[in-house]
Length: 263
Image (cartoon, rainbow, N blue to C red):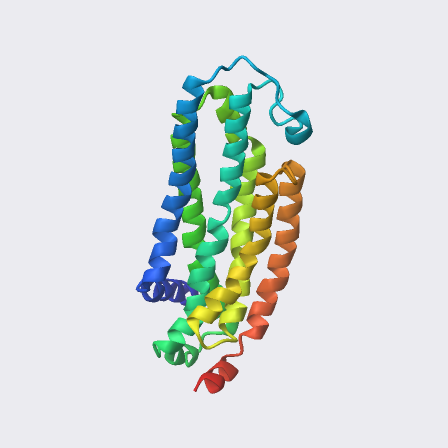
């Protein structure tokens, strides 16, 4: 355990020297929070100018999502759901940047060889790098969601806020997001151990965010409506993938081969 802890702190000391990593961990969450709160503020101004008397919401599009709500309230609920889904990009994007840099970046800075020469096992090494990428991503996601909740609470009614703290989104943020983080880290580590350029590692690893973007686009254009069933299925599927991918991330990480290939 002490070896893993040492690797975690070493990883943080190394990767956070990179400006791209710092931007991803600090400024990307700020942007993802400022965007929905700014939109809510604008919608609040529109809400003051528009009549709230109509409850004629297109059920064929929203289903039971906006039952009993006015058109403006329904629009706010729909936007809240969409932006909450967008927050789930954070646990995928942030660890990809950290994990992709953790191996290739160390090789380019010549700090990988001494690490691989230590008696630490491959499993401990991969576990340390995984934890080092997972913790900042989960912390940034949960903190962003907390700020988002506080800001939204100040701008929406109790009825609309109840939709935001629905178990659907609590499961998505506190269960699915960590699972997505593990998946993205495992993929990033496998890619990073096979390429020799940090930029290539980041670009290839970023492919993992595409399925999530497809869900966001599908929700935004009305092709699908995210519900608790989809969130639960997503969690189960990603959980199974995590086990498989973490296993292969250890198998793919061949320390001797990495050293000889990159010399």
